[in-house]
Image (cartoon, rainbow, N blue to C red; front, side, top):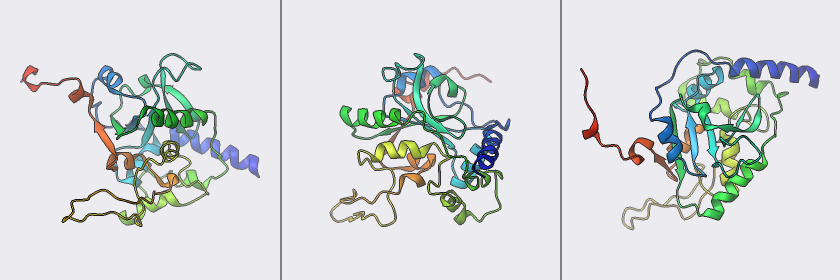
Length: 250
């Protein structure tokens, strides 16, 4: 039975990973600027165009369907010299890949705030230690729910579809790996509803004194974008954009 389930799971994974031909937004920045702007520890969000990407974007009500951790080039001496990202997908599991892979995709850089060098290294080393881990494709239900890119589910229930299935509800979503890496050093992404957040206007203390993290298996690519603990970095701005240099045509 396990062999049959794995066989079915492999074919479902291959089907879901195929590109749909539906293009997303154009790249927001020059690929060279993107490369120059990224720093180790950054989370790179990607608007993918595969079948599973469409489902994830729909269910999370977000532009982003994939996330990768930028580890820099000095950490990839076991791989080709241009491999600088750690990511996870259904077909390849946790792997190292090149930034060129996403040169023509719409991306966003999310940078954790306040990490020191040792903490950044710890996050990166954890992600690297997971390279080679594969997904258990016997949990077919985890894949079946992505077969319909736009399932007829009320908006308030869409995100709950990501929390159904095996003990690792988002095993097909890359963000679980990255969330685990950051939670290893107790770096916050998003809290549960039970987190104690002080929004006392009189004392102007807007930061929580206590934090109850959302479990890493429930973190999606969108969560890094909306997290108040990650800064959005725009390569065009960092590269010194000046609108006065634009020559308007037409």
